[in-house]
Amino acid sequence: MADRSEMSRSFGRMAGAYESGRPGYPTEATAWMLEPVVRCDEPPRVADVGAGTGKLTRTLVSLGAETVAIDPDAAMLAALREAVPGIPTFIGTAEQLPLADGSLDAVVLGQAWHWVDPDAASAEVGRVLRPGGVLGLAWNLRDERVPWVHRLTEIMHTSRAEQLMAEEGPRVEEPFGELEHATWEWTRPVTRAMLLDMARSRSYVITATPDERAAIETGLAALLDEIGAVGEAVVDLPYVTHAYRAVRKGR
Image: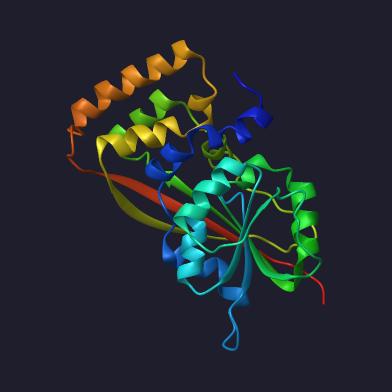
């Protein structure tokens, strides 16, 4: 198996599949993360860190946030600029942000905090946030209470995000206060091609050996045939979005 660093930076190889296969984020969940910094007089200044192809970025923009996108992978940022034109993009990580001290109202990470060092990232995010600013974390997790979805994960293998959420959940450190947590349940209509792209965009599959990928593809094909995800037929893939927020302490 590839190491954590290789897996965390593998997504650009499959940026197209990521854009097709990965879901966006519920507007309500994104608005909840930003709620502590929403003001009537001006839009919040927000950085989407680990932005990928802009799944969370576009929801931030739709809410009126003044948004910049940061990711360590230039290929992912190129796809983001196509999907969300006009958004400033920068190479960087949660542990090393190319932003000025106290310049932001919020930093949000969608499907990304499980790749970071929470101690170093908390300190660095705290540096770029104003006092009272908010750190928001979100994950879209497939609802594995549904039997076929549970089998889907078994075939693809459990991800780092799923492991984190099944165990202790995310951790943040100083200068942040306690994490608040909320969830939203929803479904995404998907085709066979979208489900295959979702699987192919996962770091485990991207970094797997050819034999491992072939076995995953065979298992996926059999399951998708069984549930009727054939051709352009649409099936509902259930998700639970977990959102967290923590306010930066200090004055």
